[in-house]
Length: 242
Image 1 (cartoon, rainbow, N blue to C red):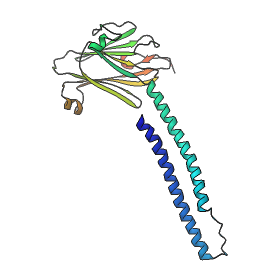
Image 2: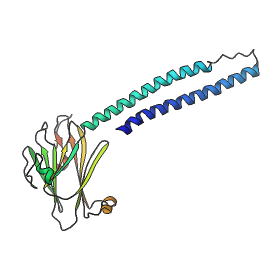
Image 3: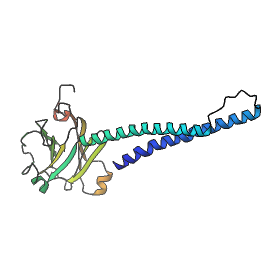
């Protein structure tokens, strides 16, 4: 956020400074032109006097300060809205081994039912996904849980999962572990986000960074104002307008 704060000061200051420089350059050229014209035509010329340089500088400084404050207030409002949005946007937690046992879902095994959640089982080739969606939109528990397992012949498997929403992206990778859970807590967020599950047939970091996933699955979620969840890939639809 510090980078945003610095930019919110530098950008409007630079714009106003540039405006002041350009304005003074135009004034100086016009002032010089009138002086030369008066000298060429003599005292009899009908030329209206210009504002003095001192007066022009004072007025320019006042206008510049006013414009700077307006621009700064706009940037500040935008920054505050972004801070508020970041608080509301989904957060992701990965539970496995010790962290799973210390969580609300201690004892979970792949495919288990979880009280308070609807379970959706999906299989894509050798990849099994268990996706849990809360039954209560006002629950304090995470709205969405995802567990995965691989039943194929590949020996080296890495899973990369991510959540994309509006202006931010969270992504992480792990060796596949069926007795683990990805928990998506939406906070107060209302809107769309995408959950992506990628499978790589390798544990090599260069392969993971430079190659496309061997398998990839996407789930488009939408949280309505009522708190209800929509996801066409899971057959969840909401027949109402927010």
